[in-house]
Length: 302
Image 1 (cartoon, rainbow, N blue to C red):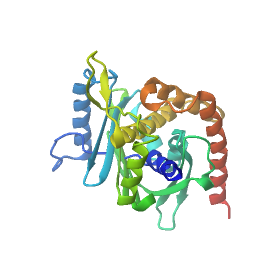
Image 2: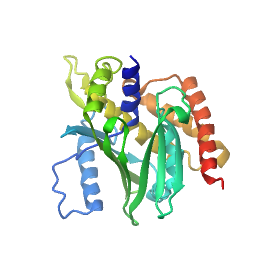
Image 3: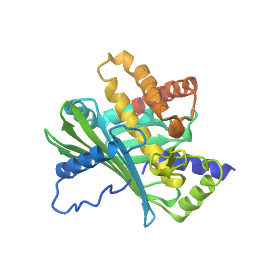
Image 4: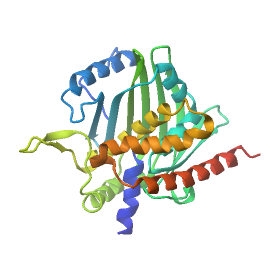
């Protein structure tokens, strides 16, 4: 049982992704490709189970696990770009996910920025007991109508490797269309652990992709590893949205508002995302935020 619980942590902390459509990417720039995804999302929204400008897709190909979320956020592009192009902002929104215990941002001697995420179980956990996954931050594009950030990590737990997180955004009127993509290469150890988890603690988990309908017309959501991956990537999308929705508040009000906003957003998808009661989540996040501030201060100390 200890092994299964350990792999439960691993499943929660990996937020993987895919290629959504059959569009030929050769010769298409990032902004053009993102525009294609937006048009595709518009066509699918009316048929989606949630009737929202939001799509989630996942895949498992050649031992690479992937998931993407595409959504329209009711915030101007400038505010979204400002947040994403500041590495320190990632440590404000990524830990809103209940499985990210802390985050630190550190400048390296080569001028690179290292973002370290401390991932653990859904309940409160000190960063010292969590797994550290360190990503190098790269601002790949920053134009007036398109931006892209790439995070790379070479190694993960249980022999996994080649971690990639990409976030793209473009303006759509007064709103912003966002794509969050993440993927990693599995290992034999990680696949065996995942199978054990899915046959026990994770057997009832579902994602967002609809595989069919019941006789009563209700959607049948995907299960298994792809279902778990979709849950994770959705949590990160909601974390970014909660951060943006509360950015206008005074500094001293933001944190409490963010954790409450994230919980409210996640509870709109209770079938997929409900894990803790509000009081449990808020109490854990307050303690973890204090730990994060301590960790970040230690990096700045001479």
